[in-house]
Length: 422
Image 1 (cartoon, one colour):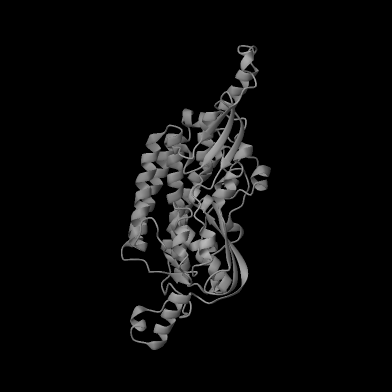
Image 2 (cartoon, rainbow, N blue to C red):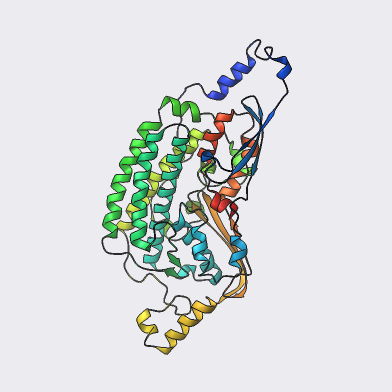
């Protein structure tokens, strides 16, 4: 599915170029020519979406150089993983893209299951529930990204619409996992618990309400003159640059690259669902906005299909050496008690080897590389954080734009520093 740009308002970049090329534009203050100013944007700045510092070199209002400075939120997650069992590290994945913890949980569990060779043993019900969780997380993250993006460039009303729906997603997450924010829902080989009574009906209600909210945001923004002026033909990322810098997710597809891990390398049960991948045509801030708008609609479409076809049965694989046995059997059987003790104290017994698994998260491809030398803890774990990779293009993207365009460009990239710094 390709997004189309029908708006033809004159973009800010063209107006700046015209002003610079006007006769006498550089003759007024000849003594000031060539002087540049260094400006620190962040790390404490509401428009940097976290503790990101960008060192900007300005020639008047025009950016001539930009150096992103990261690391203010570094917590050493990858090193911590070497001293944790595979299950104990699940809560740390909540703190990566903390706007989509459910999707992080699933991506990490799938990586460990691939290492152990049990990814093909997941029960149908487990796979469907994981897909529902991932798509709810995508909608939640895009709602925040869109609302914050709009608010950054002056459209506060959209933020109120999107946050009302995001609150509903948090209520659904709390009913399912017991936590609104840090869910830690998946387990190696399955899930921590099944769907509670009445949850599917609540999801159906959310799908109907969220579709209306997305349409309202569309009406408020898509043909809004101010929004178009601030986003169209601003922050253009060419298809070649998007590929060269390793961008993924909506930022890659906004530049016209038809790549989505769910379609290119299907995992879980995504092949069972009918959905489309929105693709941009220009690669500007406006395209990235359109792609995320349509992605939310497609996620609602996937969730609706998943709950309509949700199979019954168990949520965990039938392996007592991988999944914690039922509590009643632990209290009455010696074998189950031993398995529980071994799993909690030593973790699952993973084989030697190395694997990489990448999932299509809201910010892009979240990947986990695991190097195992056997036992219950990884020898080495590396996280491919999409926000980290997406931010790498800032030094090429920002120069030539006006200072005020920085806010729109950062909002359109929709990054989160939790997974960038890790």
